[in-house]
Length: 204
Length: 245
Image 1 (cartoon, rainbow over the protein chains, first blue to last red):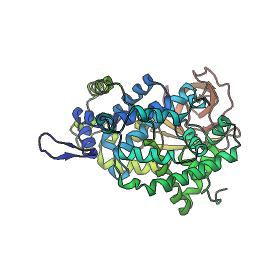
Image 2: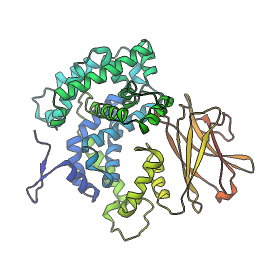
Image 3: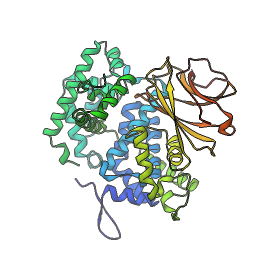
Image 4: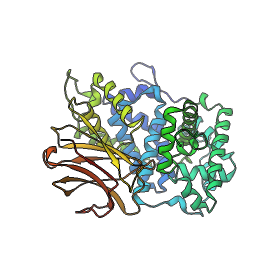
């Protein structure tokens, strides 16, 4: 699957970094193309964190306004465009959750794995409108995460998507702090191994 | 503590799951330990990959048009920084990073002062870069008090300008419904100033506005207050410093 788009004038392929370069020159069309590539991933991440569609839409808009403002400061050497946008989204969404002082992830009845599986069922990868933005990278990461033992995955997800500290994770799950600490440590180590085995650095 | 390896903490650190005092301990150790730094980098890379792990959900089709509309409004409100012809030496207060000659120096300063990622609000971050690019810039240490021994801050100011930036680290969460408030003291009388929050790592930044020349103020202090602010300090002072005249 190609993440590139042809320049209608030159017929040349524009990569993500080139599009960011155009955005820094004030090119709205380039920003629209970057939205087409990464808007859904940004929206999905925001939604995962804030659990509210209207807020996720607001945050997605804010992420792209920030891209517009600071495209000139993007440094390709420090990582890919998608990671940069998702990092901005992650920060903004966690700030929003803390600002509201609502910690929706604390709800013990929510089974994230089942939710994710249900979404995967309704979004078959064969549908081109979905596979067009669900990058190989996202699939590899989701598969690796799904292979972790549930308690390790849960602790990592509560910390990363819920913005909880280890102590808060322990309180939320009713587990001893030491247990949570070791689940996070062992889970991250295992995740690293799974990602390397899946060739994460070779996929886009 | 400083010499104790932090290999068992780097994963939680990368996930943002440590308490502020643990973050400080980890960061102090990483400054001097190459082995732990390598582990921390590895952990950060793994955590960054989790950014891709959210269950995929298709946004409403109308969102694209609204994103572009917001950007157009933004573009109309402020002409795009790099679309402007950059005159040599031109002082563009809004986007100091457009001056490439200065950029390297300011980035270097930012890193030296605050580490790799100062995690600042947009407004404070822009102003901070601008202030640091000014040859008259002063950076003053603000120490944590007995109520917050792990906290510290720097007040970055230019004497001729009324807006300064306070960058704090090592602060605890101020508690539910609370925020940190900055006070400038004039003749011993505390005058209410800006409010700020801290992130999970205990870092926060605030734009401090002086209502008069800086020489008229003798002390800067920070207290936890109700999140809407308070006319006079009610919480314990967590950060304070006498202002250099």
